[in-house]
Image (cartoon, rainbow, N blue to C red; front, top):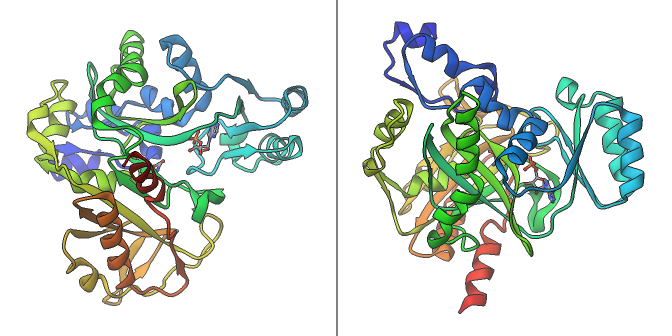
Length: 374
Ligand code: AMP
Ligand code: GLY
């Protein structure tokens, strides 16, 4: 707030979830500075999975059946009674790593023990949500909100597992593309009416109109769409392909929302597809080295329709080095999803960084779905 005041900032757009849950938007409001994001109360939709479940129940939004536990013995008893598969989630923030999709009772018990017994995620795991496993395919729906209205952006699909074929532990996301053929443009309004608008009505009723991005992580299965989680911000890496497609004045859109009167006419979306691949440091989402030198960005960005977004980089002695687990998101536009993918991987091929890796199958599910339709 001090920085924003001193530098006479017109519009603040908090990126990550932690400052949102800590109340950065409440502070900006106090100071009379426009801020595109939810207040601390609304940010609990992301910051506490049990809070999100309560709101979904109150708002009538479809989601997996669940129980909430603070006590290890009770949680373990419930796991034994229910049997596998089950999903065990740390209640609080865990950078996308606090969810275990357990295929066996032993795995679910171990997850409860880690969180409630050993304090693996600290306070974030001192409460767990245990829910039924939902079958289906995931897709993300991000809605821009001004407190009254939830405006759906085109769909995107994330790739949460660390390795090809959706293998290995979950990460914050290893790549994404937009649109996702699983949720075509013509279904966006209906989907927002089901999974976003009821939440906005509920939050307004509670005296906290939701401003910012309400991001619904959806599972599309035999019973239709169900909400897996909410984020209270643009997703990373969904944001990168989405913004590649955005035309017009993003700042004007976000400022109008911060002022409670959304101006949708300030932006439109490119009909083309966009796809981004994350370049990560070896070991991520576990521990990983930092400080690896990165080269080839100019060659990558010289390719048509390519932009490289920085996630975990910094300048050191005139060189660009890595400073995080997810280092870059190499993103490209293409006339088709297949072309966007080809171009993004071509650009990635120009970039060098020791001790790095990436998934090689970003966009695969979308391309397969399109091929089945033809
Ligand atoms: P969340 O942070 O709740 O979105 O969970 C992270 C990931 O775990 C999701 O993107 C899914 O891949 C998986 N997941 C979460 N909940 C479920 C569920 N009920 N059924 C199946 N997979 C789930
Ligand atoms: N990619 C999902 C997230 O940003 O949490």
